[in-house]
Each structure stands twice: as structure tokens, then as C-alpha cells.
Image 1: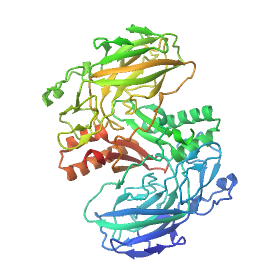
Image 2: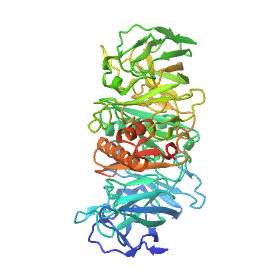
Image 3: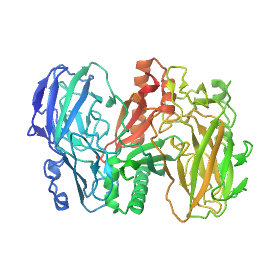
Image 4: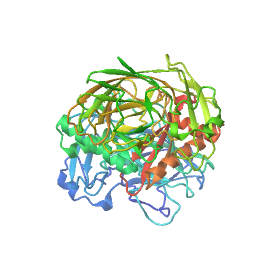
Length: 309
Length: 309
């Protein structure tokens, strides 16, 4: 197994970036990643450190790696092998960022401690325990378009996808746009719900191991992946509390569903609103219940009851 | 248990409609429902019958039921007790209706037969077996606004919500807008994925039993519900194939994810595109993977591998 070290990171997609390593299809690589703050936050940080975050340093990814023989139109198959985290993480409400940024203008921070070997559910200060399932928040390839592209938005070549099931055992297929593919990965999340509604998950440094293979000429439009088994059993044992948003706009429906859940959690469990918002971000799932009953769609937020019961 | 018969149905929400029955909180009622075509389709129908559907008769619901003491601002708690289906159902692509209506202008029909007692997965002609979990597609209350309101779109008082987990054991809370609440239900789906992407599920006639309770003055913004346990274990044993759509519009992202899955199913299982589209509608789930990494969001379609493996 080859190694990419923590200093071998960058902060934006650019297909002119020189690869840190070239691997053959079938090769495996271990990436020593730093957390999404770029080590601006640590296990002893306070909310004051969130207020002064330098956005020029956020969401570092390790790489890029060139895959020998990869050509535009191929798919890079990335088998996600394992995660080894340091045992701490953070979740923040960062002003200006998140689905309800207009309602939560103040910074907030929660620090987590957990056992990375057992992945025992992590205690949340305001109440509850969150089951952990680490995955890569950011995983992708360099785009065909020249120049430097922000690390924040995901694209058809992947990037900051924040798909909570890109966990150990999953096979991800990314559309290659440049020779060599130019793969980078980072931004481990120890847990996150579908949507990542407050904008951050349980952000955690650690080591990611992956294997690379090439599928020639698949011409994928967008990333796809295969999971080897169930994806929600760490959460679903006690069922769900679900809130909805109904209307002609999915984004507004999602906002309504999240607002409804925050209200329910505050009332029932005596959390503050921002504590409930951050808890939803790390464990509750946004689902599109229907998208065809014109002109109103239904978005639902599924909060796993096992977290609080 | 009181009974509402199949002839006691209507085709639109109107708060001036006379209740078919008034029940006290704590009461239970059994509804004998007809299918979403309003009995225009039957177990011997052909695709020609889809082409000539009279939309004035679709999506009948049984009721309304008045709940004694219900007032605006209350929540009507509906405990969904049981389903007893007739053992057949239909899934159609109806021209002009569905997430990819522009790409599927021709009518299509699949008829299903299943054992309503065992709920053994139902065979799909073009390939696969779909696990069943019946639920109420349409369940809701009369809105405050006067006049007749179409039965097709859901609203904050519920209606055609098409939420696949409104199944036996679930407790649904609906915001009451008029005295007596004026509850109606119908549109049983034997199975459906989140999104109901082609516009129809496994549409099935049958009997629904529910219990009513009142929560005074909850002032819900939108419907919410509680599930007593896991919601996906009938589907998830072998994991998922997942396609994605990445971009600034959730609706277009959902369309891209569904298109990607249709392409994958056609290539791998030799289905026609419309067969794959209808199969996604009855078993694949649309999830919002992230909605915060500005300006691009990720929508994913999760297709359960157990259906085809």
C-alpha cells in the first residue's frame, strides 16, 4: 500500500496540478487526512475559533493521484477499504453556511470524543448518542475545465459530495474528465445524515484506504455507487420521528421539514434550537417522499429515535 | 369498528362536504377503498385503458369523517392499524404525469398479482421481485380555504402525500384547519419508493383501518409522523445501486439520478426504459445527500439490489 501524507493536500480542483503519485489500476493507497477546518479546529477549540475560521484553508483534500491509463469517458472505480480516525471530531454552525443560515446567524461548536476502534455511539452534550459510520465527505477527480475550482461545491466528477454511504465497503464510480483522472480525497465524517443540514457533520481527521480500478468507456453522466449491504441499520432499530414540508419547491420543503424537527426536539428534549439543528445534521435523513403530485412535492426529515431514546 | 363503504368516496377536498360519519376521539374506522384509477383499471386491463383514463375520476378517497371536538390548531393523530388488500395492483406510465414525463410520452401498464396475507415479494414481468409494504397514498383533512380543491396535490393538511412509510403501526399527525377536521383516506399503495418517480406506485384496492385521537393546540405547520420501528428492512438486505444528480436545482438533480438508474437497469438487466422507470417508482428511494455545499446539491436514487439479485 502506498501512502499520501497529511502535508500532501490541496485546497481546490485544478487539472494542471502535478500528481503526488501515479498508481496502476488495482493499486491501493492510504491517505492521512486532516479535518475539514484544515487543522484550524482541534479537540480543545472553543466557539470563538469558529467565528474566526479562515475560509481559505477549509476542506483540504489529499492528492492528487494519477491513475495510469485513465482517459476521459472512463470511470474510476474507487473501492473504499477502511477508515482509522483519531478519536475526536467537531460539528459547527458556521455563520452564512447551512440550510437555515438565515435563522442561525451565530457560531456554535460541539466537540465529540469517541472510540475509533469500537465506533460506539458518541455522546452529544445536550442529550443523545449518535451512532457512527465514517465516510469520505470529499472524494473526486479534476474537472476538464481549466483553472482553479472551489473545493466547496461537488460536481459531476465528484468532490464535496457528502454522501453518507461512501463508507467502508462501498464501490464508487467517478466519471473521468482528464488523462490520469487526478483523484483526491479527504474530509472524513464520523457520522452525517442525508442532507448535512447545518453544513457540517462530525468532522474528523484520520486515515482513509482505497483501491483504484478502471472501467473503460462507461461515459457516466454523474457519480454512482454500490453498497455491499444495508446502509441504515446502525440507526433504525427504534424507528423514526419524521417531519415534512409540502409545497412546489423542494428546497423550501427541506427547510420546512428541518424547522419542524428542530421545534419538536426543542420541545421534547429541552435542547436549544442550534443544538437540535446540529444534531439533525449528524444523524437525520432528508428524503424526497413524492415528486410527482403536481404542483406540490413532499420532503421528509427522518430523525432516528435510537439517538434520544 | 365503524365502516365507510366503497361508494362513500369523493374526488376533491371541500370543507362544505357533509361528513359520512362522526366519531369520538379514540374511535376506529375501517375504510373500503377503491384503487387510484377509480375502478377504471382492473386485473384484466390493457395499456389501451391507460390511454383513455378519465382524469375526472382518479384518486378517489373515502370520507369525510368528522372527529368530535376537533378545532383549528389541533392535530388529528391517526394511528394506521392495518391493510387488507384484494391481491392485485397496477403501475402505469400516464402520459403527461411523472418526473420524466417529457421522456416517456407513451402510456405503459404493468399488472401485479400478490398474496395479500403473506405479502411475499411480487414478481415484476420484465424481471425482479418487489417487496411489499402497503400504505395510504392519500390521507388528509379538509383545508380552511373554501371551495373544491384538487385531490392530486398534497397540502399542509395532508392529502396525496405518497409517503411510503404511512404503513401499519405508523402514527400520523395532521394539522386541523376546520371544525371536525373532515378526514378522508384512500389510494392504497402495495409498494412505492421515496419519490414515486413515474407518478404511480403499486396501486391497489383494499381495506384500511385507522384509529383517531386528538392533540389539542399543537399548531403543526405540516404533517409529521412516528414509525414504530425500521422502515427499510424489507428492501435493504443486499445493499443498493445508487445513481446521483449534482447541481444547483434539486428537481433537476432528481431527474438526473433517475435517468442514470434507468440507463443502468436497461444495460444490466435488458429491460426497456419505461419498464425500468416504473420499477424505480415502486421500489427505489430518492434521498437528498447534501443540500449545503453551495451552489450544488446532491440527490441520490437508491435502488435495492434484493429486487433483482
